[in-house]
Structures are given as structure tokens and as C-alpha cells.
Length: 69
Image 1: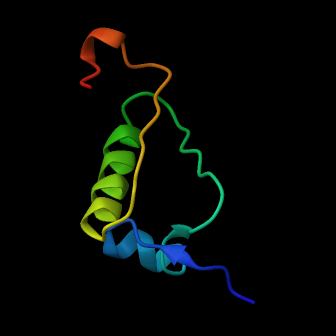
Image 2: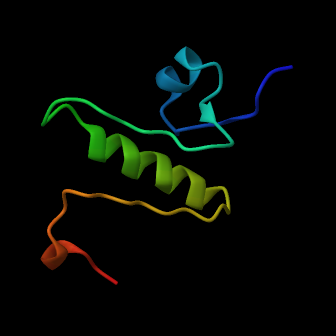
């Protein structure tokens, strides 16, 4: 049985992942500084919001001064 996938909104990435990221569970994006992890995460969240889903972004590295409530 194939697990449901949620598209990232990035066509080539979604194709490579078989439709997108797994719909259930947690996805952790890791990599060196400057490779685009935050941009990827924000794109994925924007796509989910466009599709009417509830989304949340958690970062342990963004200073509290930059967080908007």
C-alpha cells in the first residue's frame, strides 16, 4: 500500500519523491548552512496553506526577535 504524499509545490522535487513528502508523521530537513532548507520548508508550508491545510513551522535556530506572532 502506498503512503499518501503531500506535494511541496516544487514539481521536480515532488516527482523525485513520488508525489511529495509523506502525509503522516514528521519530516526533518537537514543540511549545511545556506543550502536552502528554510526556503524549502517555507515553500512546502505555503503549498499546504494554499491547499487549505493547517501548517506549522518550528525552528530552533531563528532568534526570538525575528519571530512574528
